[in-house]
Length: 364
Image 1 (cartoon, rainbow, N blue to C red):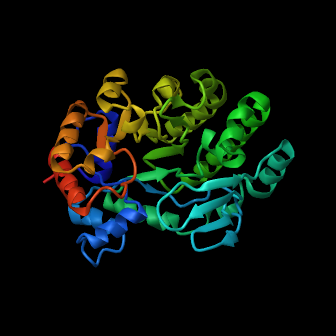
Image 2: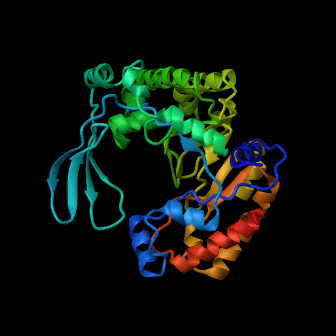
């Protein structure tokens, strides 16, 4: 089987020679610098070379069309010193980044504060039929991926999201309050963004057959979802069903969602609306792929390996891989880290993990 065939068969529960061997989640910048000090080959300049060294299978490649602001905001630096840079990003969000290491940005100001702001932003930057959305050489790239058996994905972080887009426009806390104070606006933003995605998707599938439609949400924390299952169904369910209907009409077999945290409470409404692939199953938030595999036997999953265990070395790595082995045996699961690689993971321990994971999935 090639990488595309194996990816689809594994997650759909069809006969497969082995699970995919993925090294998808890359290192923090500080992790990379640590690895350079610890003997990683000097010629390695990016993580793709690490993947190639260990023979990682190809994960889905994203089609490079624009599903976000069009035109983008120009990145504008507002202030910069030795430690921080404050700037406007391509969504129009004012943020402050730490320059000295890995850290979450500080989000200072979001572009939408009122219905008038939304209407102006929508009219100026969210026209679904803007021809610039289809600019670039993505058709040629997709031809190359298809010829090499690489899975093809439609949708990507952060431009394709239902909750994700509202959060990205209004802000985290403001978004959650808006479900109660401005529900009509939340519905309107979600409906418009769904229409935008489907307009772009419809044009893409004239030339390319994707294998998966991907939606970025990041709508959960350790305590569970940021909105209730009832609100998920009321606000997001209709949008997902429209996307699922499109996927079914065009034989796109996977509808995936990326959310950190613990999504257990909203998995049932997500699956009812068509989601059949979920990741990264964050262990620190309480996700256990063995438990979730039993609870949702038809759900495809990826992730679920505790990155913290890898930092503890060989014995802990072996124990962690043994822990998730039952889920691997059950199927519909791609074992991988539950997010990016922190800088307490040494180069030696990462190499050990990569080799042991390859053995676990049976790749020779």
